[in-house]
Image (cartoon, rainbow, N blue to C red; front, top):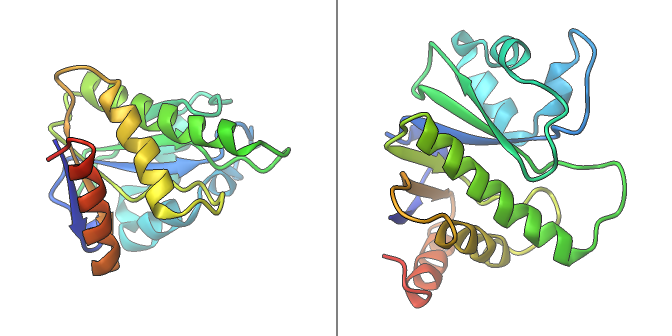
Length: 179
């Protein structure tokens, strides 16, 4: 089930959170913070006791291919698992068709990682990857990824700060046969 929720993703009651990273960049020691984007930075700021950067450095094998996902177990904070998805890519130009496939595939991989980690509910923002897609386009690709995932997927809570956007995305999901 996919639920679109107007609110802050960091207030989710889910047991896992999706955090986009640039997994293609292989940092030296002490440079892991360069991998993360806005959601990861906000996570670090709000939950410093989770030691997310240290946990990522200790648990993540890099490079993580564009569109792939990996679990990071965290001992502190509201989420048991942070699922990092490799979507923040800044090295070369990618065409829109490929970028859309990265959104779709990375979300599907996040779902599979969450499933293997026995996650019941997964919280995420819209995976736009900084690629200037509208939220509707990015969300439709996420829905396609979810639809291709098969049965036994975790529940997904997609968070939007704007109420009108949450309404539009909820309507989009329903129009495509999602609850």
